[in-house]
Image (tube, rainbow, N blue to C red; front, top):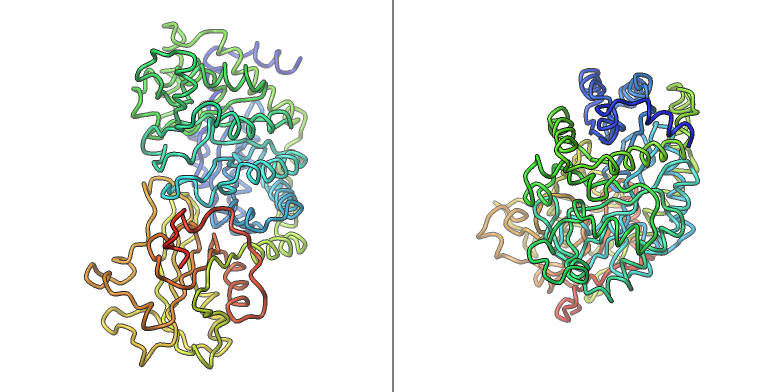
Length: 544
């Protein structure tokens, strides 16, 4: 605390304001680095890139250039949004499907070790949202599922293992996402639970993690009207204020009722859930004044820092809250030991970093998890296992998917196709000008699925895209040709194909997942995944 107080008190007001900002880096270029460091932010959030040498150099340069220790954060959630030079692990829903808390802890330890090797100190994980609104495009595979008990058990294992590696965990998204099928990246979304249900679910999840010592919590652009109305019965529109600018939700509920003493970081302040609620000049100081200690992301850092200073001078940001926020952020850095570490302790020389990534035991654990996640949802026609005698001629209908996240690779089903061909299957791609028929096709294999990603609004199985046109979309093959639907993303696509008899959830399209899937398709290994959600969406029709 002596270092925290001395550092804080030596800062100008402008420097204290800059300390509240975590800015985002996407390119690992010298120009980008210089531009970010010119603002002297408290932290930099790094998105995955594809060149280890460049990532190492940019990280080391940023740490070296910062007078106050710089914290480095990331959304290290697993799935396909990962550095290609690190151990690729399943996303949170894939991990939950393994239904093995020891394995979950081992995976979190791998994330912690490799993230620390790359210079990270803070991961905006775990996601503790309850995946109830199955059309929600942004929760889905980023969550541990729909069961609060499973979510809590997985999150506790993750937080303990990650923080044991010296990386701060961050439970998100306060006060709880997944009830609303809308996306807070686009609009202020609403958790419409009454407070009895909220306290029994989200309150218990966040409260237990607080008691366990989770270092940080992310306050999102999500409203909890039941709590606001409990405190202010005549609140009107203010009942739908996003948590990121709600003093009641951050200070009275999270800090007061749940007893959280750690750091509260806002969700990204460029998101529609905040920008559609209030104008920028009001929102910038309001984020800190109403209980967040860190201001996440900015399209124009100089302008936002000026707006924060203006808010302070005009009384919309109090000196008390500025002091508290800076103190908490510096305290997090001190708790992580950043003020004592040498440059080589923050990020080692490149050869040592490279040696610490993708170690054999890491890869073995990740491969085991990829295989364990695969979930056979239904096989009403007893199609599985497939074999090249009965199902030699395979037509693949695939969706390349998209990703909002910087650095995410293009999806590629080459590993799966190659593995099938190596086992004697003849695989061809769907051709809208030569539609498959029972005379030339023994199996149709749909490879679809979008991992949870922001700004999609809703998820659905887009037959117009898959079949190359709206008229073709109306043609369904499943009653004439054996058909297998595999999702490499969200677990709910059966909703749009209820009459498909065989359906598998794979959660992510990682190469290890594809290889393990082929082994199970041909019967060389069993499906052991346990669905973390109701893949039938509560609809009996889907079960048949």
